[in-house]
Length: 358
Image 1 (cartoon, rainbow, N blue to C red):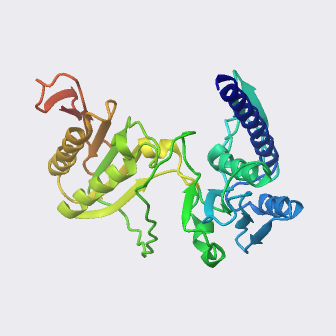
Image 2 (cartoon, rainbow, N blue to C red):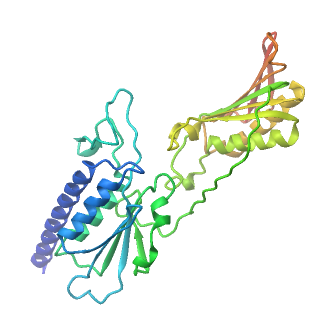
Image 3 (spheres, helix red, strand yellow):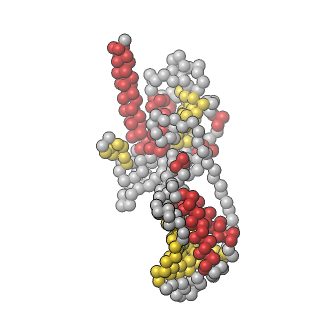
């Protein structure tokens, strides 16, 4: 009995290794094809050819989504079909000084200490791993499985555009495994979902007058809204939106500007720091108090989740004149809970530091 089990274990190990080799080979193949969001046509056509070469049912739409169906293995042909899903686009970013054209160049894959990397660029394992795994299932003639419907969607990274455009009538499966996950061997049974809103509003630019309030939130840990959603990490953009809303409701403002980098994909840095500039008509003391009070609220709320958070508030009265007084309020969290009051400390004649200590 022990010998039989060992033979089965060896057979399973051999099959697993063979599948891993095929999986890696397919990942190499797709990594040679540029596939940034909006540039998935090449990989989409590659998948169609892959299916036709294996006499598999295939569907491709105008958005370059691809569906490939494979009947169940012997003994499982009459089972209910299962849908496997992943997206074929990737986030394209590179290190400073790296020459790489994501529109034309494939990825330069390298292995260090048994770990696969892309040389100076993003790897695209999100969600290239799912694409390679589905190709492995579709290619394997010995794998036991029910009928599978592999769905490859496009432009996921910029708004799930491919999934929204997909003709769902082409799918018969009622059980889906979304393979856009993070940990191998771990299944997540639910998710928080998402919502995208586009607001169009006319903007009128005017010459600003009054007190200038500049607020900078930084030091946040950042993270991913999927894998880190349980860690209560904050987004600087959302904190600044709350700050802007608070000041807009309680002051007579003349202008407001939220600064962020102009990129298609929101980078990590944008979620960990943000700058808000506002021009208001209130005296500097009220503006300073409103902003500092909310900075303290922020610190109270997130102190246990964001150890390096700081909110710096610079208030300048009548900035249109040279030599206007500058006031700076910095919200700081410290481990010394006994220092719970706001301390005012004079640094220069025209500058005052307000520290919100939690």
